[in-house]
Image (cartoon, rainbow, N blue to C red):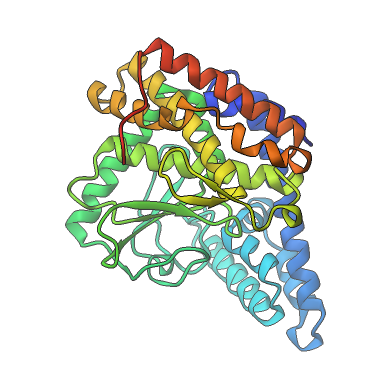
Length: 357
């Protein structure tokens, strides 16, 4: 499936990416089915967990319900963690919630991706749902640190309005960027985090489909920052999905390698470095398009474009040279193309990429 990496340059430059999006969707759906099969096999290991009863109840669900349950981020998490008891409890609760929704004839209004009785507060167009008060807001989530609290009610409404504007402005810049968000982001969990002085977005490769926004209610968080958060995490998730079929490198061979980020100056492992290259290229391409469309504030778009291009003032592939033999060759070729396109943007806009974080 390396052909997806061949097309990844189109996915992150927001040009003619329909084929790449279709392939990404196919990989995601195929993996989602495998995840549920993995959970069933886990439960079958313990006769006391009554796997046959759970399977019988699952099979009675309508196709839409099965599809939603397969795609749920927690289904992915349970398949990775491999705990039979937790998996059985999760599947039981997921089926219960889905069945109650059907009985209430509120299926079209219930969350397709949250199975912990969470009330969905809003949906961004035909894309991700926004969760402001469900259990996911407070409970520990994979790879998400900090101290979680619900947003104050007035602040929560302000976040919804800004997310709405950011999402639709993204669509005005690029229908492909909006489509990638729709494809990769099933739910956006918004929480306050008193341990963090800024707004930070995050996602986890073992909970594909869930983006977490920490402190999106802060007064300095504008529409442009929320848009960048959504695109940033969508690209990360797209990479995670692509790697389900075709990893970027052979992990065991470069597990101790550290590279310096040309954006932040921090020391990064190889996976984080490669992901950063793709994310910043995608953001640079987006903000360049935003300048053309004028869908966002021009001065802020220009600043973000310059910031995203900072790492491309030197060749991002040079630090990877010692590892060429263990890198996915198709991915590497595509990544080199991103350097060329980023260099063209630097020249076109006469930018130095000098803006610092």
